[in-house]
Image (cartoon, rainbow, N blue to C red):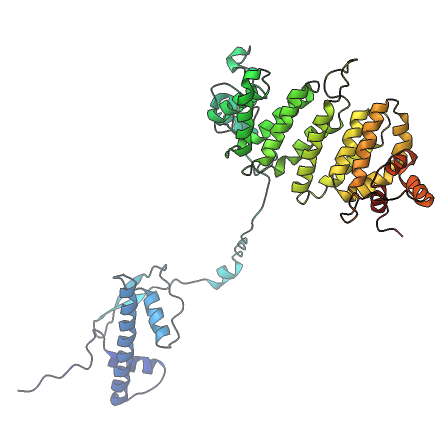
Length: 471
């Protein structure tokens, strides 16, 4: 029996014939032995590429071999990958029958491209780069009308709760300075055509509103039986966390009470205690509200009249205690927030100096201005107060007829000058100053103030402090 001829390849296609066809297409004539050896090498390379591609497919948890797997296999074998094929491209195979052998041949149908049409085709648009644009969503709770924000008609179409209408979210009651001004919408006539604008920009919970109303009612109560409740309310403002949303309402409430009740000493003292309690609460961030606190404090420090009218028996000096309290709060705010607001201390100093040099202001205003300048520190006293004492002595002090009021102002000026003393000087009594030193002091701070300083036991230390750093 004749033995069967062993196949030269284990694949469905014939590498031998393929190599010979490729060589003939290039005009190269190969003998059978060379074509056979070359076909075996090509088949080995193709098997190696497919095996590596199959590994990539399995590691990718897939059962379908993709062109990316062949690409990675070629890169692994340090062979330049094939270009022009990707996974998103749909390959259309067409069938052709070779007439000589009768075998079926499958090929990829490439789309024909007309170069003239391709050249005349307009260029695609350049893609835009990714950019970011900032715009104001709201400014102090009011939304500006810019293209990025929704239109006013769209906002009105939203439900009241979504757009922050306080009247509907809290059962028709809007929050204001006091609970008596909260009026339901149904009590207003012609409410069908009336648009009610919310008094606040955000929604407060019922618990926060109830807390605010109770504290406000307790603070203004004149009943002596509720003094312990007032102390408890101030202690709550001083220590309770979670009062951030109520801070602007308390500040507005304090400002309204101070403006409308300058004749009530007890109420003004309570309002200053409220400010002190808010400043003492470590969980409240008061820095954004400094601009709202300063008018309240400066009003009580420089107001023309605080407390009731002066009677024949009463000297009416109770307002000085209010001004002292306000000056201490002013010092606390300037020391705590002066670094954050670089213009805070200069603006306060300018306001106090304007009141200090105004001859039309009453004694209480001058008292508060001297006290405020003194509490701002040694530098302000040396540059501002001492530098303007002579002008103030001639234009303001000499115009005051009441001896009691003059003595009060001179006493505060002397306390301010004692700040300039050095610690090493102490309060030791010394001999009288020379005539030249007395004349120099009088030329600097005025005759009236100089005579007061010359009567003080620590006049030498005050003199050295006034002329510190000068030859």
